[in-house]
Length: 330
Image 1 (cartoon, rainbow, N blue to C red):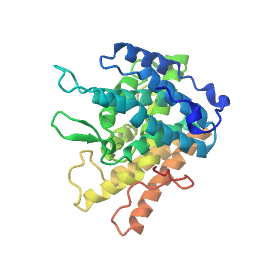
Image 2 (cartoon, one colour):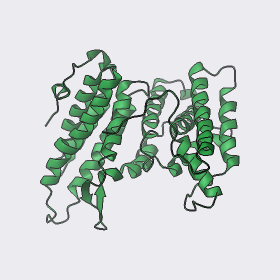
Image 3 (cartoon, one colour):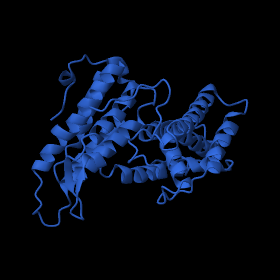
Image 4 (spheres, one colour):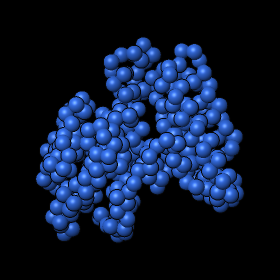
């Protein structure tokens, strides 16, 4: 079942192999051992890793790898599980649902290991978007008998909060431990993962999730520097990638077109986020990367405002960050 780099027709780039997927491989092996329905998660991990390795540092190859990963998960990994599913087995959970959930978990773990600037990061994002683009193709039936579709990216949104809570790297670290190797590792994994999830399609990375992720920066940090660093990074990433959708919902609520969004949104809150980002990046000791991320976040917010005005107040959804190539769904 393992997909090799030969499938892509491109040459593996061993120079990009510096990413350490050791923890993912160990977790996938454990899940495979514990599987009650024959889920070969180690094979899934190895196949995705091989496709990422083949992508190298070429943007075009990353797009090809994204398509190949999506095709692999759907055609070579999930379909055999679906074909072998026996709904008559007493007391069994839906094997197809369990398998999809675990595939998302593997993607979560791999995303933790890949920096946002790395081409493999874009490949994983593209793979999820391509699965989302499968439209009305069914995955499995849910308990209420409705059929879940690939376009739903079933369980990924719910998996977010489960993984979010389990990944919080600052809950048990004191101020003295902020510069420890453990803290550095946890914060790096957190940043990598948040940057990945913030780029999910709008119906997965919803405005409600975005607001909850951004709101911790509204108050001055009174906790550990590790927590403040993670909260700051999280807010920047979500605004860089979802400012357009959040602003559209904000303006729809003001116009009375959107009543169901739970997080309280207002122009006052929107402007508060801008001020807080500017304040957090203002001190002399702030590094250049932080200042750059703040500039990108604020630029995305201003672009969202401009797009809304240009659309005559109807909203345009997520605004593409200037200079970024729009990912083409395949």
